[in-house]
Length: 257
Image (cartoon, rainbow, N blue to C red; front, side, top):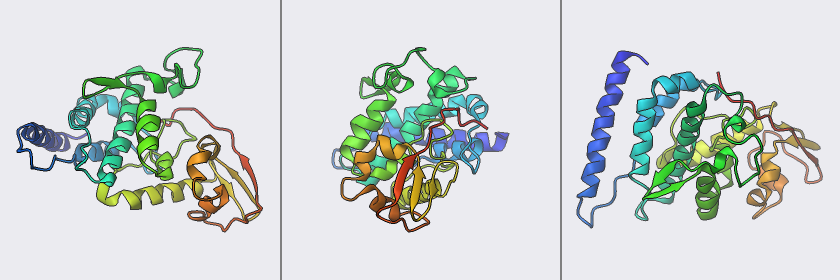
């Protein structure tokens, strides 16, 4: 990161820190301040390329800025006065920023699964169960955000293409921050990009070989339709309702540049 950009971001950090402090003394009838995610947006544009690959070394160099962004979020959690879009954008950004923070704390590694116990039991002792995110005096983990908050409180299957678990088979990490006013466009863009990536999904009219995300979270995609009906909302190819469906192997290698 060049010196002028770093100075600009420092000014932004001080501004948002001031606004966060102002929030604490605002009158009761004044709406809470919603984070603008400017700092996160700059970090993503600097350290994530257009294919979604991440410069973890770059994030390590800018660890103070990453920490400041995480502090901005954790010290200003969503309020019921926020729109649903602003709340969801907050949780997606927090999940992605915290995932990068977790990886940088253990870098260099070959996979996020290298973090923690050598024997990992899903929902028990994987990297996603490491408690390191403190909000309102409670320390939570990445699974708490994804499964206990986002999937529980928001009926939005497209989050699976925005919340990125640092693996090559994951959807690509978008190199811009999610914001409430742009969220619908961003989520639709993410799933369309994912479905057209032949390394992660192969789709034709009569056969689909798709990411295991669609199997793991099948209930999210089939709440109001069949899986094929859901895919056809975003697929580049019209899929027959009788098409054969199979799932690709999932690659857990780190999504590093």
